[in-house]
Image (tube, rainbow, N blue to C red):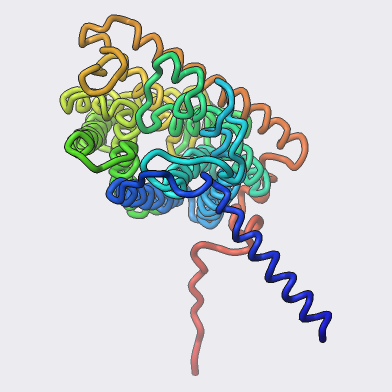
Length: 445
């Protein structure tokens, strides 16, 4: 009895020590914490977290019913695994003291602090961004990726690849020193996820039946367009946390005005992207395709994410219009190249992440907080050149790093499911369940 009590007390003491570990972080709260800024950042984090079900609904709706559980499981585990590894190592790699390439201190948040808000609030806001970058990839690799392989990818993406790119830019790294500007993550978040999705889908190859013997693409229609539409509306709503929340402060007239400008720019770009995509697909194919219209809205949102704080509403509208055109042409290009992207993740996030980042160098204004004016405001080619360099460097690193990871996964645990499993659907073989259980008719006497 005494031994059992001793073991129990020892266990409780151990749990208490574990619970005390986070108290190391930041060596106590910052000297000054602004209550309004803290609440604003946390509220924005909650909105960005709500984008996770938005992505889940969009991706599930645009894929077939036999794979719905699988895509939902990936979205759940994206955020769960990203949260854990981003706490343990990712945040330190991204924001910890180090060199121009990587942070080297602050693992488990030890010894770190934030400016004006609690460290915990700063971490939560950045963690939901990390989860978003990983989630983007699931749509591009949908309907044929082995679940264990995808989990390995998520761990490495969230622990290392995304934090390194974030350190170069938001963490004071080498791109930041050059004056590279990406306010809320057109390149850092969306471009990273989009380019990795491109690599993944190219290594996987197209889904069975996607391209006919003559090479022409076939429509493998998503099973629930209303669900996909709900996902897009949720994402549009969540983006009002993603972009305005990246101001990281709400107190004072300057912050309030900045948040308002970012909000209108975000909304105008999304609306313009939706209309431009609808009109173009209508002209090209004779019908105002809803799925392309929805991706046009997302394209506008992705594109405005980098310049939203430093451009005028008129510029945001133009950026969104061009984004809607890019997504339609991008989907068409991928089909011609036989690159099967079931939800349009690459045109939306990679192509328009690059476009939005470059747009900073065209319409950005020094008066709104940019280091130097963009091309159309008399600043010459300097900022434009820096923007192009930054987005190309981030894309190249993300693609090269994850190509190596995917190749190693394919050579070890395997990357793609067997043909028979793909035909049956991943829900049954990978998860032992169905999203929509068959209706059964029972005869009664």
